[in-house]
Length: 149
Image (cartoon, rainbow, N blue to C red; front, side, top):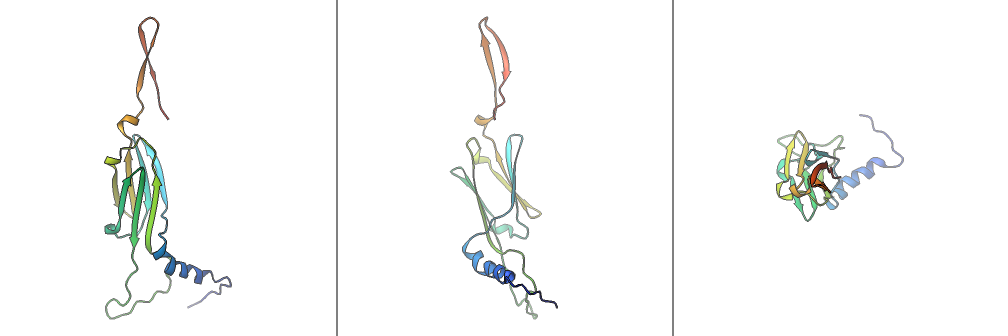
């Protein structure tokens, strides 16, 4: 086995952060957010997360996501497990997003498939763009499409 010398103690610092930092401060999770038709979709990369540990909440215009990747127990069976390399972050992952007005928070849905948590936030009916009839002098009406933001 080869051991690389790191004069800046980068590996020791990373290990200390994983061991001592992960239980105190939740780690962030990468995400994508986009609008698709009449809904917003947020996808979080969470490979290896126990689905039972997932917690998704939408309240007071805040979306909160929390998940946990547990440390694999050592000493399973007769053979003791000792890591040669442990680079995957473990512990608690957390993210909060501020949501704008005009979302239907009563109909938020979430799905965890293939290591990706997908949260769908529908646009509230009252926030969707509408066509408005514009009248002009002679009583005739012309329909003008008003495509909101």
